[in-house]
Structure formats: structure tokens, C-alpha cells
Image 1 (cartoon, rainbow, N blue to C red):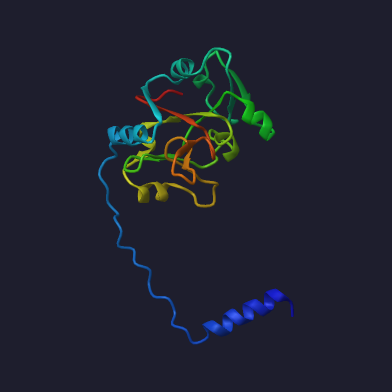
Image 2 (cartoon, rainbow, N blue to C red):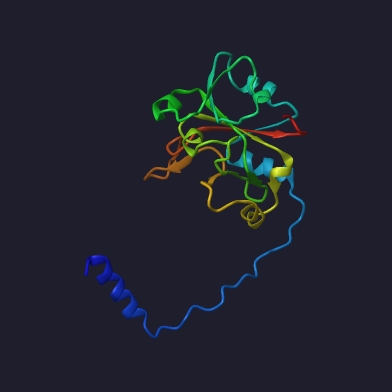
Length: 201
């Protein structure tokens, strides 16, 4: 018998005769209002993200990034989203140092929650690996209105729990031991969200 078997045997012995867990309550909200895009913008702005409401991604990206900027993009990012003024480097397994050295990253999103101001990436081909949204100092995230839901349960219902989910509520921020706000420790210091006014493929 190995240590694992010993520990599991003790757990089984301790649980013998214990009451079985009861039914899990599922009485949380199931119906929701239409998502409020203005509320999403308000929440994102509160979290120090910069929101651009635009019908054109490429023009907005060109306004955010200086000419000659190098950006990392996931494999299936729509090419029409990239202005000719930036150099796009597709992540095909780029090393961490190459990703971190880029001026920014551009991704799509899976869903956004108006109530909490949260954007979720799920690693789809237009969003890419989690690492590309964490290492560059600037993240530009493009969001369609039909991807916005009112509340978290709606977002969870749309997501596949088997995918690598990254939940973003504004730029990376934490507090040091003296409760001073520190930005950029666990992700990008700057988050720009392009909320499309209409479809831009």
C-alpha cells in the first residue's frame, strides 16, 4: 500500500456513515433584462479601461497605436481589423520574450457582462492563447454588441467550461502591502475596448 492509498483509506473511513449532501439550491436568477451597453461602458471606465464605440476597428486601432507599432495577434483575427500602420505578428507558438516585447496585442472576445464590466476570453482562434493577453503592456479587445449579456449567469451559460477562460475587469491592478494600487503586475497596464456600433468583419 502506498501513501495515496493510505490517505484515501483514512478519508473513506472518516466519511463512513456521514450524511449525504443534500440537493444543491438553484434558485438564483434565470431571467434577465436586455444588456445595457451604456452600463458596460460605465463599468469598464470605472475599472480604468478606455472604451471606444466605433463602427471601424482598423481606424480605431490606428488611432490607439503609433505608426510602426508591433502587435501580437491570434491566428484567426480578422485581417480587416489591422491598419497598414502596424506590424502584426501572428502567435504561432511565439516565445514569451517575443510576446512581452511587443507594443500590444489585439484580440476578439467570447462574451462580456454589462452588470460587472467583465470581458471573457475563451482561447478561440480569434482570441488566442492566454499568454498573449497577459504579457504585452497594452491589450486591445474588440467586442460585438451581440456578445454582451446582462449578468454573470448568462455569460456562464454561453461559455464552455472545458476551455481556458480568462476573465478581465479592466487593466491588471493589485495592491502592495501598504494598499497602494500597482498596475501591470499580472497583466497589461492598459486595456482598450473597441465596442462595435455595427458588424465590422
